[in-house]
Length: 95
Image 1 (tube, one colour):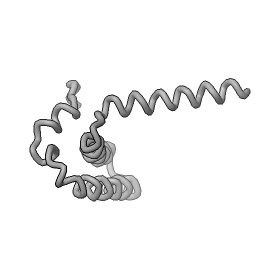
Image 2 (cartoon, helix red, strand yellow):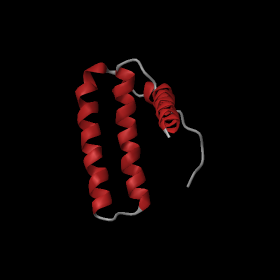
Image 3 (cartoon, rainbow, N blue to C red):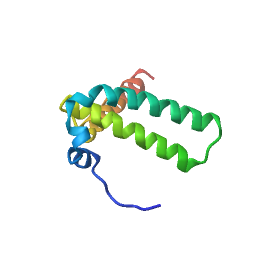
Image 4 (cartoon, rainbow, N blue to C red):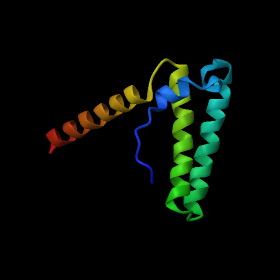
């Protein structure tokens, strides 16, 4: 597998389809469709590459949705990771 750093945020900003907010409903439908494809791939026991491909497609549409609201994937993942760490810390304090 190729190991290169890709900035999905920058890549999508260069593609006209993902720049046009009129396509926002397509992003939502695309995300739903890809979620279904991931579920089917897992249910049918597809190989790891096929599952990775479908999850990758989901991430592209999710990133397009984030961009439509002025967020980046990187900032969103950092925020989500922070929430997980905070929750874990709270759980540890309760023990």
